Image 1: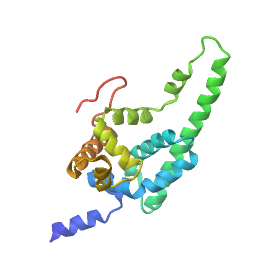
Image 2 (image 1 turned 30 degrees about the vertical axis):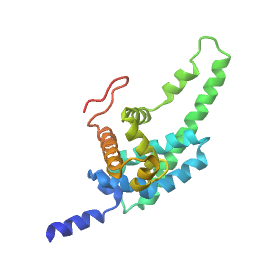
Image 3 (image 1 turned 180 degrees about the horizontal axis):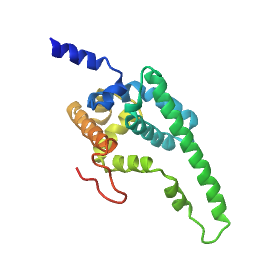
Image 4 (image 1 turned 90 degrees about the horizontal axis):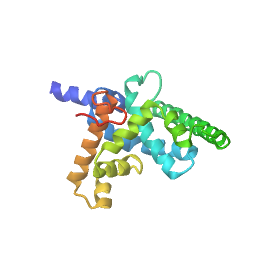
Length: 198
């Protein structure tokens, strides 16, 4: 009975506190609960669908990295997540503006920094790591997580949309999220240009 009560109290905690304590199920619940909010904020500030999709992924990675900072006495979970999303989107907008200005300068200067080099130099370590870890996942894991993260589909709807068995969808989602979680906790940080070690 005590164990059941303790388990119930744990599940009653805010999702971010559960994520910070290592609860893997809370990560998927966070995606399902807040994808609509994050997607809405992203679409308002992003230039195109591809940019918005990248931003959504970065935002959720940022949310998970900062889950331990959440304090329900200071702000609600929704407010905390919205603040992180807005901060990341503003950073992306400023970075895009700097890249545009630098690209314009490069057009008139021989031997200057190329736009590609400019983009690479502007990417922060966190964004680069997030992009790398997502690219390292298997194609099936990427597909499942994109449908879940970006389109907010449940496991059942992903199974229907892809034709995969429900158990396979859950396995891909779980393994992909575990891999991302390893990166977030520093357990398997991917070195630049190298492979991650499990």
